[in-house]
Length: 288
Image (cartoon, rainbow, N blue to C red; front, side, top):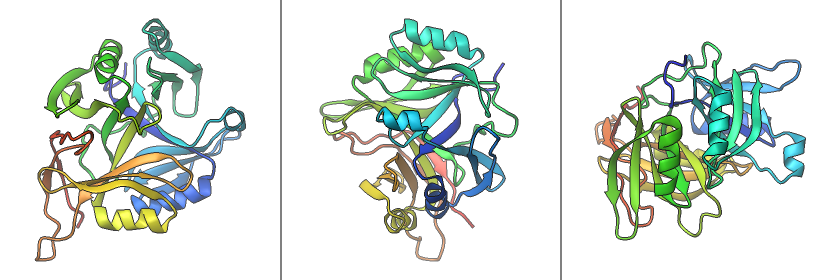
């Protein structure tokens, strides 16, 4: 049995330049890195302090030849990955990598019926379980699905993982629907804008200073394609790509309070997607 079934429990960056990615995220998010390679797999662990946050690995050559590009992928913990993969197929999704044993546990790479990709993991190795708290610096603090149709996507994930609806923001033309797992609000879904080429999951990394992190994105060869944008309560977000083209997002405080301290703030999420200002609530803590 997994400790938190239906929750995101691990993350991986699959990229075309591991060395460059390791240096980039160390500067932007402040992660440390430790080699965890095996004879069969070159693998790096990212960590925030003593907490292991995610893995880093090469995009396989076969994938490159098929047109796969660098990306972040989140893994949802399940009790039985084989049964979950079968259920995804029955619900109209796809299984890209069938259930197999790996360096982190028994995994499968899948897609929902609208082609957004994610991973499943059973028996995540000790020391790699993600804590329930989402608010610490360096952690993955939010999970956002840009769907072709958020209502159909929510029905799929609700059936698959038991996710529940939380609050929602109703905009002039669309809705941003928050969702919870195990009683904790962990993300939101919305229907993507036409400029977004395909449905995908976007993961938000907590940083202490959004401006400093955004500057590191630019100087490190990445790109900020939206933001920093203000959120209710004083926090800010920026949506970015790293130098290899993987999408990710940042959330954190901006500047100081006039007396040399970055104030704690209660934040909302994903402002100004199609005119919607989300108010998913989380408390962020300043460093120091």
